[in-house]
Image (cartoon, rainbow, N blue to C red):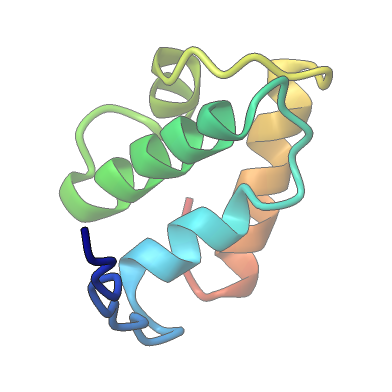
Length: 87
Protein backbone atom coordinates (compact mmCIF):
# COMPACT_ATOMS: atom_id res chain seq x y z
CA UNK A 1 0.00 0.00 0.00
CA UNK A 2 1.38 3.41 -0.93
CA UNK A 3 0.48 6.84 0.26
CA UNK A 4 0.02 9.40 -2.44
CA UNK A 5 0.61 13.07 -1.92
CA UNK A 6 -2.55 15.16 -1.66
CA UNK A 7 -3.69 17.17 -4.62
CA UNK A 8 -2.40 20.70 -4.72
CA UNK A 9 -4.78 23.60 -4.29
CA UNK A 10 -4.51 27.07 -5.72
CA UNK A 11 -5.17 30.09 -3.54
CA UNK A 12 -7.70 32.52 -4.92
CA UNK A 13 -6.75 36.20 -5.18
CA UNK A 14 -7.68 38.47 -2.25
CA UNK A 15 -9.89 40.54 -4.58
CA UNK A 16 -12.06 37.60 -5.63
CA UNK A 17 -15.70 37.47 -4.57
CA UNK A 18 -15.11 34.16 -2.78
CA UNK A 19 -12.33 35.54 -0.61
CA UNK A 20 -14.30 38.71 0.19
CA UNK A 21 -17.46 36.77 1.09
CA UNK A 22 -15.70 34.29 3.36
CA UNK A 23 -13.61 37.04 4.97
CA UNK A 24 -16.79 38.98 5.77
CA UNK A 25 -18.05 36.10 7.94
CA UNK A 26 -14.71 35.01 9.41
CA UNK A 27 -15.24 36.77 12.77
CA UNK A 28 -18.78 35.52 13.36
CA UNK A 29 -18.91 32.93 16.14
CA UNK A 30 -20.77 29.81 15.02
CA UNK A 31 -21.59 26.51 16.67
CA UNK A 32 -19.67 24.57 14.02
CA UNK A 33 -17.19 25.62 11.32
CA UNK A 34 -19.59 24.34 8.67
CA UNK A 35 -22.13 26.97 9.77
CA UNK A 36 -19.60 29.69 8.94
CA UNK A 37 -18.82 28.04 5.61
CA UNK A 38 -22.51 27.86 4.73
CA UNK A 39 -22.97 31.52 5.67
CA UNK A 40 -19.94 32.47 3.57
CA UNK A 41 -21.34 30.52 0.63
CA UNK A 42 -24.71 32.30 0.91
CA UNK A 43 -23.00 35.70 1.04
CA UNK A 44 -20.87 34.75 -1.99
CA UNK A 45 -23.96 33.57 -3.86
CA UNK A 46 -25.68 36.87 -3.10
CA UNK A 47 -22.65 38.89 -4.24
CA UNK A 48 -22.50 36.89 -7.47
CA UNK A 49 -26.19 36.92 -8.45
CA UNK A 50 -27.77 39.70 -6.32
CA UNK A 51 -30.96 37.66 -5.96
CA UNK A 52 -33.10 38.93 -3.12
CA UNK A 53 -31.48 40.88 -0.31
CA UNK A 54 -28.42 40.27 1.80
CA UNK A 55 -30.72 39.89 4.81
CA UNK A 56 -32.57 37.06 3.06
CA UNK A 57 -29.29 35.38 2.14
CA UNK A 58 -28.11 35.48 5.75
CA UNK A 59 -31.40 34.19 7.11
CA UNK A 60 -31.64 31.46 4.45
CA UNK A 61 -28.18 30.19 5.36
CA UNK A 62 -29.59 28.81 8.61
CA UNK A 63 -26.45 29.82 10.47
CA UNK A 64 -26.35 28.75 14.12
CA UNK A 65 -24.57 31.49 16.00
CA UNK A 66 -24.50 33.05 19.44
CA UNK A 67 -24.98 36.51 17.92
CA UNK A 68 -28.41 37.88 17.00
CA UNK A 69 -29.00 37.77 13.24
CA UNK A 70 -29.27 41.56 13.00
CA UNK A 71 -25.77 41.84 14.48
CA UNK A 72 -24.52 39.20 12.02
CA UNK A 73 -26.08 41.21 9.21
CA UNK A 74 -24.46 44.43 10.46
CA UNK A 75 -21.06 42.73 10.68
CA UNK A 76 -21.27 41.37 7.15
CA UNK A 77 -22.59 44.65 5.71
CA UNK A 78 -19.88 46.73 7.38
CA UNK A 79 -17.15 44.42 6.08
CA UNK A 80 -18.56 44.45 2.55
CA UNK A 81 -18.93 48.25 2.67
CA UNK A 82 -15.30 48.58 3.71
CA UNK A 83 -14.37 46.57 0.60
CA UNK A 84 -16.35 48.93 -1.65
CA UNK A 85 -19.63 47.06 -2.07
CA UNK A 86 -22.92 48.92 -1.87
CA UNK A 87 -25.27 46.98 0.39
